[in-house]
Image 1 (spheres, rainbow, N blue to C red):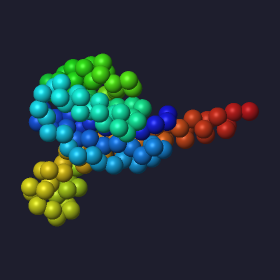
Image 2 (tube, rainbow, N blue to C red):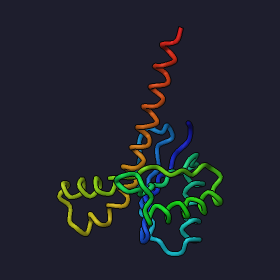
Image 3 (tube, helix red, strand yellow):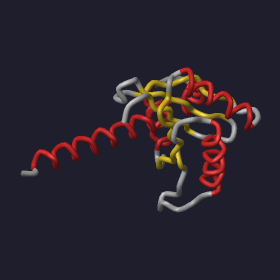
Image 4 (cartoon, rainbow, N blue to C red):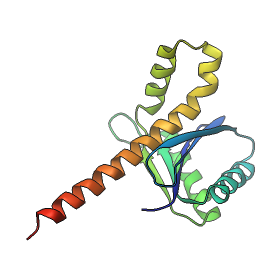
Length: 152
């Protein structure tokens, strides 16, 4: 996998955004997208994809703790379908269970004010989502290389 990856933490009022470095090792937060209209939101994301030469977009899939479909996961799936038609790279869902809770916990322990936590939560959630994805991909590559090196 080469090229940058964009992560979206989908929300009804805001979307947290993060992009990987060119090597796909680290995640950096981008300014949170304050939602307006779906078309404007899609165009904003398309602009980011083009500006950062994004090769893949992942969108957090808010499944239930048991892994089932939720009302929000249906909204996300509909959004992913629309986004897929607007960008030239693959768009995929990625399990985001616990990323918002983890972001909230991290921000709470940082000691910053409630207002600043609220402003940062979506961006931090997107960074955690993307870093989890990047780490998973790195582990998969390492497993593949180890398996190949064990073959005669």
